[in-house]
Image 1: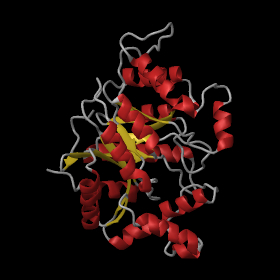
Image 2: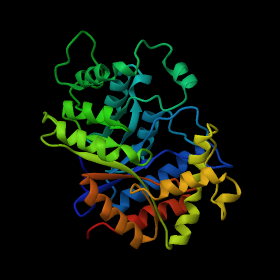
Image 3: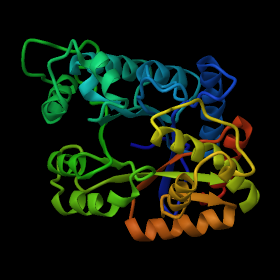
Image 4: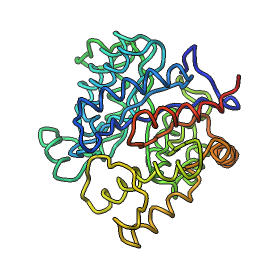
Length: 339
């Protein structure tokens, strides 16, 4: 589940969640180049995983063809695990995902992760465009996961075989922002990643459900939780708050149902959003899973979060406009790692 060059903080691995942000004034090709720069940097820093998330019809997120981008990142890195955080399984035929990730695992052995979500990763009109040739719905998610597990097994049942895929045992994670996937992951004995970076209000309840109901399996003998969190680290608290305004603008635009490319930071956020919107992003910045500050403040808040949740891993989202500042943020966060 880990790689040889991984480092930890208090025994906890840190990983990277990349939404392949498309910056204002740039195109997706620039985003992919930035992702390569970031992946190569964080691998040297000692991060464990580099996950990409499936989204559609969002001008500021370029990771829609998730499996293709995973292969691109894996090809340009050496040992770091690369995977989906996640693939929205109801958008796809399980066989296709098995073949895609079987191919990735064959090309990059023991480096591929497959995180699965049940949301569409988009609006309803786009979800229809994605799923209109499929018969399944989100209610079919448990059966889809079971079908996918079967394709990766040594002796798949049925007449259909994933080639490549059979016998590769690609690690499957269940992802969620509510209690649904927490219950399913516990029932199946699978690792669970909770999206606390955008659903902090449900975090503790989901973790309790997962731990209380966990059943050991061939995959895991005890629960394993990775939390998604927002961390923006800079040389000063003031600089961190400034560069965090790009992510705050993105949140506001999504809540307006007007997604845009990732915007440059601004000195005065209140000059471009309403007072109600400003209160929303300020409240978000006060949660335990959005951490913005210098290295000292980040360490204090990470310590408090780990004490509160007993998480086994953290996966960090840092929506920062300038790629050099983004890399610097992950580097400063990596300074926490034990020597």
